[in-house]
Amino acid sequence: MLILNVIRHADAVQNSISGKDFERQLSSFGIQQAQQLGKFIAENKFNLGTVYCSSAHRTKHTFELISNEQKIPIPCTFIESIYEVSLNELIEFLSKIKETTSEVTIIGHNSGVSNLVSHLCGEYIFLNPANFVRIELSITSWDMLIPGIGKCKFHFEP
Image (cartoon, rainbow, N blue to C red; front, side, top):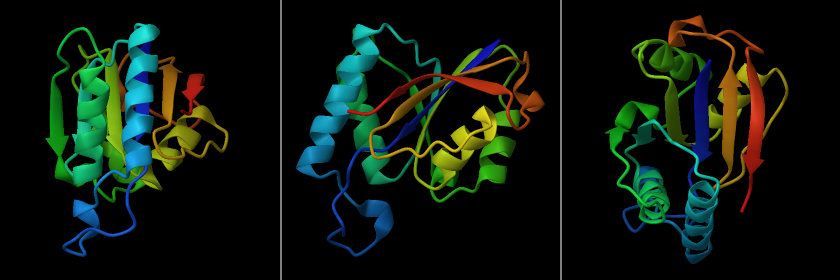
């Protein structure tokens, strides 16, 4: 069995100083959300496994705040291609993960992350900012992802 954790970045301000969506910052409420999410993950002793995070500012800051609440450092790979990614691109990205990796966390954006969770769990699940979904996948390899293969074990919303 494989585990996929999916996190949508915390609440962000409407506009960045530069006007670029990629550079939007977390709002003060978003900072609180990410800290609450980090505490929830720590209190429940969830292992985030291998973490892949969009390199957009708001997702990086969400990860940093979650990570600060953990007892041990969490390594993370920041990937620009997770920003504004489609469902098919996310499935393709996941399918290339090594078979020896049993737990993965994706920190990204809507509509991609909501579409991914809905696709794998076989039901519509919308992720609001700072939502965390933990999915158990009844497969042994990341290249075996098909619709409905997952079971949503937790859906946390701060």
